Image 1 (spheres, rainbow, N blue to C red):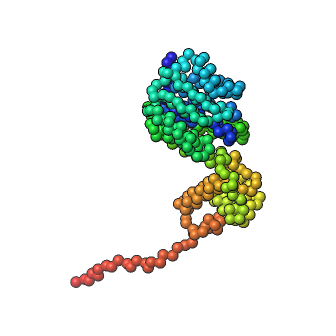
Image 2: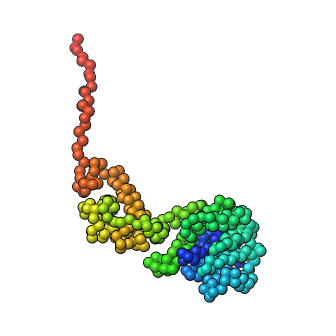
Image 3: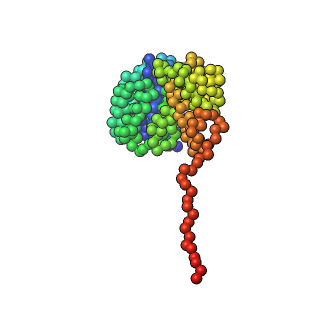
Length: 337
């Protein structure tokens, strides 16, 4: 059986100071996230592509965990592989050291660039500009690791990317206890399996993932739940059916319970706090949902001035038509002759 070789561009990268390791990838191939990216917290990351040898992923991570350098890992994996000339590989370790390999039979254009803390690789590309753009963008983009990885993918596509087109993309970033409820190291694991614009879709889904599951915001932006903020939250929770009390501007037990229920039902468990503050992103989301509900009510029920502030049971007032009644139509008088 002849396995398909698929054009792909990817980047493996590490931010040891932040405790992050990750892979971003795009390809004209279905579900590339199920094949190319591999990573483990405190160990490193691996991208295996071209005629991908998926054994490179777990074996490469195991070798890194034993303390082998990325160069040694690449050399040993490929030396033991009779199809190495058709393989492509990128590796970064816990310290940010990186190495890559491009087999001589990978389809043009194929190649890689290794930089400080990252490696970019690709095959069946429009040109070497694709991997050069990835490297340049990753090095120059501000922000944390996921932002830099996504920026690198976008710049690679702008240079032509996979010369056969686009189909799937993935972003995998690991950190210690970064998974849901701290149950794994998969801090970010997003896959776009089949889409006409997979990188843009990956970015869109990442924004939702970030809003719901991650805590990447600056802690100095946390907002105290008191005064006008508490009143606004109470009003929004009331509109959405979570709160039925008065607008007291006090963060009392009923308000806290209603807010906790809102967080749980909207999958914000990872952003719940117990110090009397709230993340700005959660406040913005709550206000947006309340605005949507307010707009919905105005189109499905009679419009009553200030009804949303007056509580349930408000009824529309009878409107008096100020215009005078229409005059009866004129009729011609008929006289008998």
